[in-house]
Image (cartoon, rainbow, N blue to C red; front, side):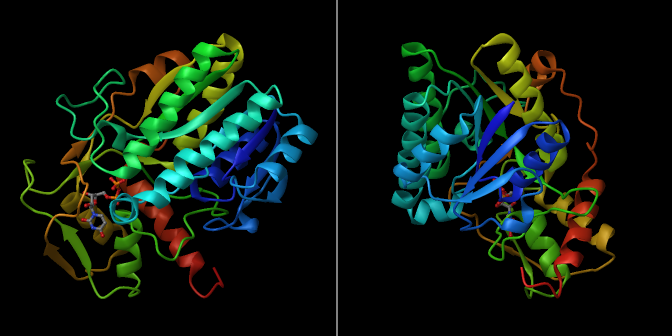
Length: 327
Ligand code: UDP
């Protein structure tokens, strides 16, 4: 298939581009390189462009004539979204509208959309299924709910189909060592822990120890980025084969607390890095664990790296590779 990948130079996008390239797809990556890197695009052509630039986007879509779009380009940090909501609505909602309008204009009818577990807020039942109420706790999650809703309405009104993949906590790096997270201001737990182990930060803060969880810290379902990449390849086949719009959770179905992740990071690195307990971070849900039965049954997805230490080890190897580089 011919596929346009927005945000394909970023962390998750670049792993998906590699997986799609291996699967024989013809790719065009559209990325403004605000957080991504040209070296991370291992397959296809890279066009440096912003989704706000509808003229360029329309030219690209009209010339390349893709069968489908995979849409990663978005801002993703919960805490930042609380401080700067308009930045999130502008990029995640308004720019998604641009993309959809350009797709419709050019007769491109299939999209895989990056959504998030943050759409659920604090789910009543865990593991959470796709039918749970959407009650996001922060602008990031709300912006992704809006993206999903826009696509749902469009799919009812026009010949248009989507699969929204709701990612739980994506972590780890390419096991061949070619790709990984390369964003200096990364705020995610595993990356922060490993950068602290490296001495880049004085200490790791644990945000909140008074949550209603067994050890008082938040629980998340950490999924290896290559398993998530495979979910995209399969979701694309699903869309091509069935033409059905769907929403699917992407996670393993079990979680780890912040304390458990910190202990695993210390074990994998062999470094007893300093940790402090601080107050809660705005917008955090106590526990998010995926029921991924739908993804498994509809697409045949079978994860290969459901192992927290493997996830951390691949991320650690990548962090070491980043040392001394210009990234
Ligand atoms: N977290 C933490 N210290 C950090 C970064 C994150 O205690 O330096 C916690 C955060 O409060 C949340 C969990 O780790 O409970 C996962 O956060 P992350 O930012 O990795 O992902 P999110 O679930 O927000 O997408």
